[in-house]
Amino acid sequence: MMEVGSWLWKLSFMFHVISNAAFFGISLVFTVGDKEILNEKTVKKYLKLAFIFVLTTGATGILLLSILTMSGMDDLTSNPVGQSALVMILGYLIVLFVISLALIYKGGEARIYKKLFGIMFFSYLFVYVIRVYLTT
Image (cartoon, rainbow, N blue to C red; front, side, top):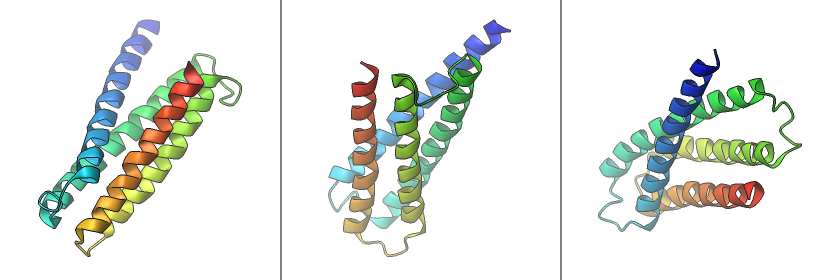
């Protein structure tokens, strides 16, 4: 049974890290991008792709958190790993809210998309700086 849990942990962690990195990269490109890359057609295409990455990150994060709780980490507030998981959940909720706003936005202004991607990028960056501080 532990063998299956080990492979499940490794696969879900791999998908979690890859989807996180892909979303982080997309949000960085559109945060520092110029008006040529920020046209509405390109932004909407990559926004949908980023939304898929965010959903994959959330699903694998829930799976990883459930595996952690099954292995004995019940109280998330008592240790640094649990505290960093709570910070990651908060950052994920902020990003999920902002990306939902960006998906329903119909204006097409480049500066609005740039600000929305900037909020998502810097919130993820802030979460990972806190995570590194808590786990080292």
